[in-house]
Length: 98
Image (cartoon, rainbow, N blue to C red; front, top):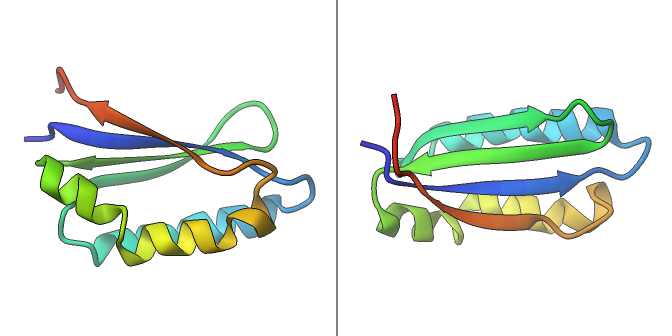
């Protein structure tokens, strides 16, 4: 059962959209290799340049471990290059699901 998650807000730099989307597609592959992740989604908002990541976990230990995993390291290593602001990480507690 999913109990915890993250929502990461990403504001892309103008003209970097194709690089951002390629990077986020690679992120899905990295997420598959991380055993604690139950679900992982990269999303693009209607407004140009706005992206997000939603990932979910069964327990808080897995969620916290994710912050020091390869996927999180890759995101923050490329943040200055791809995004106009640092990623905003929101910790989520799932209260209901289908």
